[in-house]
Length: 161
Picture 1 (cartoon, one colour):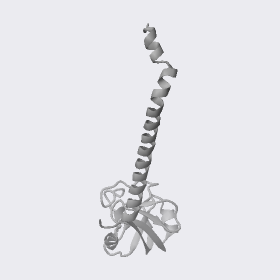
Picture 2: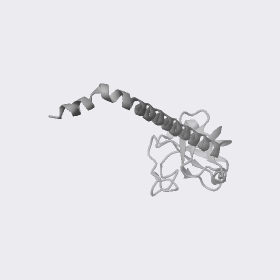
Picture 3: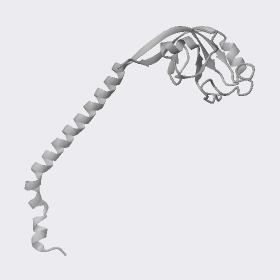
């Protein structure tokens, strides 16, 4: 058991007057630190937004399937950069001229009239320009129904620092 004088020294009545200013100082310092951290996070988000530019372009969009007669006979479900294509994946192939526009492997793209975000994972044959190909798994009917359409695509391009 603690000594009675020690218990008296640690009682709330004894601690309150001496600790209140310290607690207030600690709370104020903690609050300021939180504001500083949150402000820095907001600045970082703004900096990211300032370094990225949204681009848009009208392209011809067709559709393709992972079938040997449409891709590669030996590995129809492997994209140009080695990514595995599986039904349900929102992937697109882009014509080679679009790489200069910033549409490189892994770029996320929004396609007018379609929900969600699509990812550049494949390249088209060099004969195609200003075109994209929507990956539609093995659903040939859906690809035929899509046909060829003129669409506007949008993507973020990091600007030079």
